[in-house]
Image 1 (cartoon, rainbow, N blue to C red):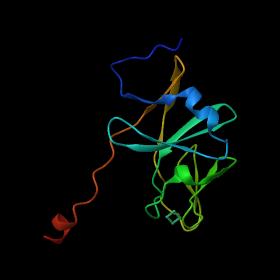
Image 2: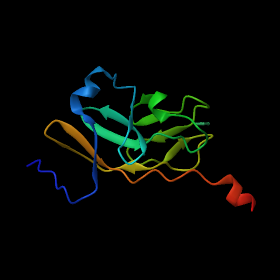
Image 3: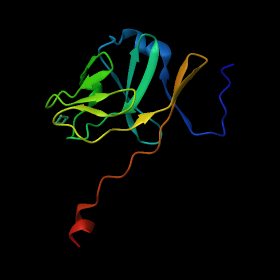
Image 4: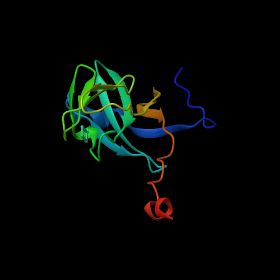
Length: 126
Ligand code: FES
C-alpha cells in the first residue's frame, strides 16, 4: 500500500517521472515548500534525497557528479555518501543531512525539515 498519511511530515519532492531526464550520475535540485533545498538522486531505481549544500562551502551537490553512492562536490572535490550523508573524501569532514523517502502515486516524498535560517552576522557581532 502506498497510502500517504497527511498527518505526518512528508514533503512533496517531485514526480518520479521528472527524474527520467536526469542521468544516474547527476542530481536534481528541488526547493521544498518549507524553503529547504534538496538534491535528489536515483541509483538502481532507488531514490535518495539529501540537503543540497556542501558542508565545506556554498556548493550545490545536485550539480556534483555521482559515482556509485558518493556525490562529488563541484567546488573542491569533497565527497558524501548519499545513503548516510557521511563525508567520504577530503576536504569535507562534516556530514550532511539525508532524508527518509517514500513513493506514492508516482510522487517522491521525503521527510525534510525546514531549512535552518542563515546565521545572523549582526547578532554574532553584538
Ligand atoms: S565547497 Fe564542497 S568541497 Fe569545498
